[in-house]
Length: 140
Image (cartoon, rainbow, N blue to C red):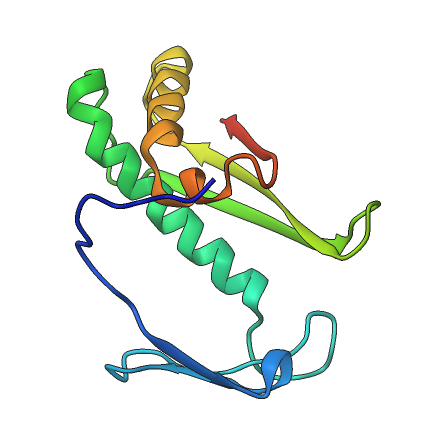
């Protein structure tokens, strides 16, 4: 299933050379990083770390976006920790796993879980991965 957007609100451009042991940078110069394969002694980051950072930031943004409708305030100290796994799939090729751990200090757990479910329904990263990988959600 392909997704057709009604309107593109933002477009990001990144250029990578050398794959997992190369470098990547964005056209605006805000990101310019070295890449290293996971588990090696390289000094760069890897795609899984970048995905974890992007997904956790996007998910927290989705929580804030739906908080008014859900009637749950997102405290400023709220954190989303993404754990991204990478490995071979039983049916061949490679895949990733994703687990998001949400900590909302001072918020009732049932309210936090309701907000997290609503955010998962609208988060662009959740929507992009839905049906392609299982995303685990846990609330502290």
